[in-house]
Amino acid sequence: MRHGRWVAVVLFIALATLVGFRGVSGGGTSVIAVRDPWVRPAKAVQAAGTPQNALAAMNGGSNSAVYLTITNTGDGADKLVGVQSSVAGAVEMHRMAITDNVATMRQVNVIEIPKGGEVRLDPNGYHLILVNVRHDLNAGGNVDLTLTFEHAGPIQVSAQVRDQ
Amino acid sequence: MTADNAPLTIAPTRRGRRLLWGLLALVAVALALLGILSLLESRREPSGRRTTIVTNGVSPSGQGSQVTPPRPLDDFTLTSQTGTPVALHELRGKAVLLFFGFTNCPNICPTTLSEFRSVKRGLGADAEKLAVVFVSVDPEQDTIERLRQYVGTFDPGFIGLRGDQATLAKIGPQYDLYYQRQPLGDGTYTVDHTAISYLIDPSGKLRTIYPYGTPAAALTTDIRALLAQP
Image (cartoon, rainbow over all chains, first blue to last red):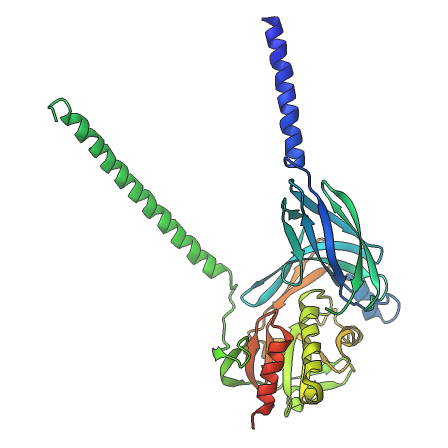
């Protein structure tokens, strides 16, 4: 009887651990790739200069948008949880929506990447915003980005600056 | 059937009827709830905005909505990115593509203005018969200098106008214009705004409206058709 109880406890712990891991990994492994990244040109706002300009710089300065496609060929779902770039004060994830011809932009904390699927970040939905660009982004240049995924970890991307 | 079986066959039928009535009542309640919810939804969403632009039929490209009859627009004067005032009536004789936005708009406005740039290129020699106007709905932040920088990113020939609250309030209804600041977490803000592109004819009347995302080719087709009219 005493042995039976111990076996039950060990079995319970093993089962709980197994279930726990499945929850974390979503029951598979994500295989993430990023393709066709591009960035809109933007002019950096000079903080020095007129008071109005300094005020403008305080309120986020000049922004630009990043578009790309994320594919997940693995058998587990993943999430884009953060993005960084050396050219911007911050990189935010946004979702654009049109309601009654009114465009709204809302920041999101994660972008879900389903297993075996792809998510397009384009002008009509999810996209990334480079907040307060540090220098002019001119067509032909490149912008470095680090996309961090919950399971796949950080992925380095170089995005070309172009008009469309 | 034997007498023993009779009560057995009647009992399930009664129970069945009761169940049926119960289900029907449940469906009715669910439908009523759905109706109330959708009514609330339709009341909530437009947030007091009313559509006043009457459209009927599509533009030659098939992608714009024709304003019928073409709507005369009130004249207005705003300061442009060069610091000089520009009045709408000064653009008579040209087709006008107009869009409302703000310079910190990183997605919707650049997407639209990029299409406008393609339209201008696509028109070739006729480009001089087109004026592209970008009206800022964020005058607090959009200084003349910012406007000049922003519009210049697309085409220095575009006219960037700094909308002031009084003028926007006056002309807004003719364009079904809506704009509302939305604070972001870091103390900055974004602006929700109408994302329609407006095509104004050379006589100053609103002819066609386009939803966000209308490709340049469609706009070019319609502008060519408009310019070809006597």
